[in-house]
Structures are given as C-alpha cells and as structure tokens.
Length: 272
Ligand SMILES: Nc1ncnc2c1ncn2[C@@H]1O[C@H](COP(=O)(O)OP(=O)(O)OP(=O)(O)O)[C@@H](O)[C@H]1O
Image 1: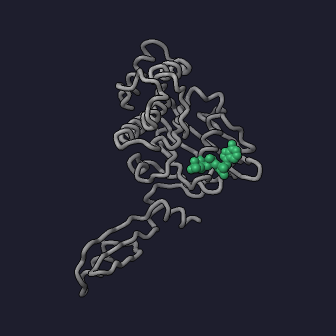
Image 2 (image 1 turned 180 degrees about the vertical axis):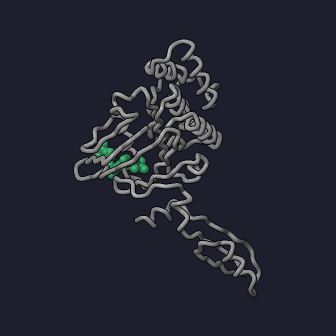
Image 3 (image 1 turned 135 degrees about the vertical axis):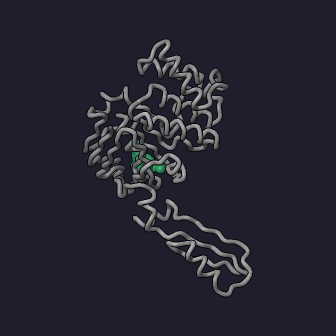
C-alpha cells in the first residue's frame, strides 16, 4: 500500500532523511520508532505531500502522494485544529472534504465519535479542550473516511489510559479491515498491543525491521535481586535460569526480585 524508497531530505546542513526506505502492506501496522530527530516526522510529512523529498520515491496504492490524498488519514504530531470550531464542525468539514455526504457522513461520524469517546465533547470548542481531548479529535479526523493508509504520528502523546486504549482498539479494527498503518511512537508496549512490526529509524534511514520479538530476542534482560542489604544486578538472556541458579545456592534474606525486560533503549544501543 505504501512504498517509500531511497528518500533523502536536507535542511541546510541537517540530513533529515538519508536513504529512507519503508514498505507497508494492507492490513499491516508498522511501528516507526527512533530517537528524537531520527527523521520519522519528516518521512510522514513527505508521505502526506506536505514536504517534497530531495530524492527518492513514494507511492500510495501505486499513486503519487498528492493524487492519493483521499485515501490517506493523518493524525499529525502537533495539534492542528481550529481553536474556535467544535469537534462536530471539524468532523463535518473533513468528512465533506473527503467526499462524504449526508447519511454516509452521519454514519462515519457516529462511528468515530463512539470509537474516540467524543460524544460529550462534540459541541465544545476545540481550543478549550485538554491536550488529550484534542488528540482524540485528531485521531477521529484521521479515521473518519476509512482511509487505506493511516499515518499516526505519536497519536497518544499526553493521552490518558482510556483514550490510549480506545485509539489502539480503533487502529487494530482498521488494520483488520485492511488499512495499512504507520504508527510513530516512543512507547514500545503500545506497539506490542497493536501487534505491530517495528521499523527503527536512525540518522534518516531505517536500520532495522522486524517483529519486536525478533529485534529484542538477542538482547539481555536485567535481573535485580535485593538480598540482605545488597542489590545484585545481572544481565541475562535467561532470567529464570539465572534466578534459579542464584537462589538454589546458599543466600541471605531475599527482599525483592525485579526482572526488567530489554527496552527500546537497549535496542537503540545495540543497533548504534
Ligand atoms: N522544517 C525543518 N527545518 C529545519 N530542520 C528540520 C525541519 N524539520 C525537521 N528538521 C530536522 O530534521 C531532523 C529530523 O527531524 P524529524 O522531526 O523528522 O525527527 P523525528 O524522528 O520525527 O523526531 P521526534 O521523535 O523528536 O519527533 C532533525 O534534526 C530536525 O531538527
């Protein structure tokens, strides 16, 4: 559905993208992760047709980004709402721009209002809502016209657990119905909940691609055991065996055991 190959983009001396290549199939959720400044948002902006790449190609369903705009749903990283307009007015405007009319528009609005918990907020001005509530409206706009490609750039930043769960459920449903999804986040557990594959961006390109199990499998977990008045810290690929070995020998009084799974930071470090 989305094919990007060899994208480069410079801002003065900064290489925002440097050979960025990524493909996303219908029904696939790709978690786009990477340090601040890795090029994730620049990639999203190029796919949206907002920024022109210096080199490389992007196609959406075989078409150029501008021609494919109608099949694109975008929740940008920064809040981009009209402060004086209500959620209802936003959804009506964007729905009409996407070609939805009357009963089709009403049905699409009902669906996203329910999915993004907007019923009680519909007629309040967006500018007076909280950051998390504004994110719900942005996500609803992205989902409204059932696009074939969803680009969600840190859609849960500042969202409470209920909003996060609603959004993740809505994204899963859309992917199950065949949408291709690019989901940018700094929060790995969300991607596990989505069943997403990972694409790791670094220095303006994708340096690793696979399931989180594949990418994290070689990385050691950390086991911390508080015995007597000492804390032992061990890196291990088999936390259970490490603990059994430790505790089957003579030992003092165990106060706590903590197993820290390999994190996304461990992944970045291993790829650096
Ligand atoms: N309009 C711009 N003008 C100048 N530099 C830019 C512009 N947009 C992005 N950059 C630079 O390009 C690089 C990539 O930025 P980008 O926003 O794509 O990163 P990111 O991976 O989305 O980061 P974050 O996780 O912080 O959102 C950064 O060094 C950034 O400062």
